[in-house]
Every structure is written in structure tokens, then in C-alpha cells.
Length: 265
Ligand SMILES: O=P(O)(O)OC[C@@H](O)[C@@H](O)c1c[nH]c2ccccc12
Image (cartoon, rainbow, N blue to C red):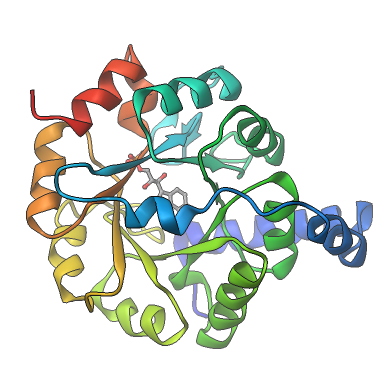
């Protein structure tokens, strides 16, 4: 894959991190541990439950971002997980990338032990090792970024995620990545308004691309959603699930804010 810009940096960071993690726990041991654990909460069922009248919010634990710097660096993941669940989020996304997003696998584990909702491992997946790590931490879903992977790699990762009783959220950021997502076995497709190579936001990408997918694909819109009006635009385009980080984390009262995203009044 010809990754560039931010994704290239991220690829290098991840290669070093995986090598380090593998020295501490070899893949075979991690796999054995992951395979003894009970199946996690069902992320695909959660996304299937999204309807125009009852949208699904995947609320994100995001302490910082590469484009904005610190959002809420001291955020308490356990407390936020409980607030998100009480407010009616349908799933929780946890950044496990540490350099730019200030997240970690520890945050993922904490959230998984403090919620009954399915939890997404949000990271830059380039090796199967990271998929086993997600399962071992208790995740019910793993983000798979199309831009970073060849078709063969992507198809292997999607199949492994499903085999481990998790769901792949397959992310694309443009029309020309649709084919690769569809031919590699994606059934839940995240359309990211932010291009991860340039970090630029195209506020209309998700609503433009979602209607192009076949009916059986569940679209999830991601990035830049900050009010009920944005959500309504998505609903009109046939999107009933939204992944939202920054605006929730920055809000003064995430409980009230999530409720305001879900309802018209
Ligand atoms: O904070 P926002 O604008 O609501 O966006 C959330 C989510 O879409 C974003 O965190 C994201 C989408 N895809 C990613 C891939 C890697 C890291 C982060 C992301």
C-alpha cells in the first residue's frame, strides 16, 4: 500500500510498537489467552438496531487528536464509559493509539470492564497481533482502515476479526475505496469525513457515499458531527449510526449532549 502523510508516520509507529509488544508477549501466548475468553457484546447487532427514529451513537473516548491536540487529556475512561451507557450510546469507541491520541490498551480494558455495551478498538491495524490484543482486552469490534491495507491483508484481517467473535468496522474515506471494502467482506462500513493521509475534513463525504452502498451494508458516518442537525442530514442520506468523538468529549455535560444528538427536542 502506498500510504502517505499522517498514515505513513502512523505505520512506522505501529511497526515499532508491535515489535515491542511481541517481545513482551509472543503471538502464540496472546492467541491462547484471547481464545479462552467469553464472546464480547455483539457490535453488529448494536449497529443493526440503528433506525431513523432511534439512531445509534458510537461514543468515543478520545483524549487528544493529531489535528486538535489535547481535547480532554485527563478524561477518566471508566467514568466516561458509564456516562455514555447511561446517556443511551449504543457502543463505545476507545482510541488505543498513544502518541497522537493519548490512548492505550489499558483504556480499552478499563472501558470493557465498566460497560455492557460493545466496545470498538480504534487504532491503526497493520498486523494480526493487534486483533488478538483487541479480543484479549474485551473489544467487540476492531477498526480496519482500508487506506492502510492491501486487499489481501484486509480480507485476512476481516475474516480473523469475525472468527474471533468480533465485528470489523471497515473504514473508507472516498468513493474509490468502496470496491476494496466490498470485495474483502465488509458488512459494516465506516465512512470517515476525514481523510487520514491529509487529516482534511470533507463534511459531505459520508452523506455522498453512503447511498452508493448495497442495502445489506450498514453505513456508519464518522468525523465532524457536532449537533442534531448534522445527524439529521445523515439520516436523510440513509445513515442511522454515527461515530462521534470530539464534540462529545469537549461538551460540558456528555450525558445531556448525547441525548440531544439522539432526539429532536
Ligand atoms: O472526533 P470526531 O470528529 O467526532 O471523529 C471521531 C472519529 O470519527 C475519529 O476519531 C476517527 C475516525 N476514524 C479514525 C481512524 C483513526 C483515528 C481516529 C479516527
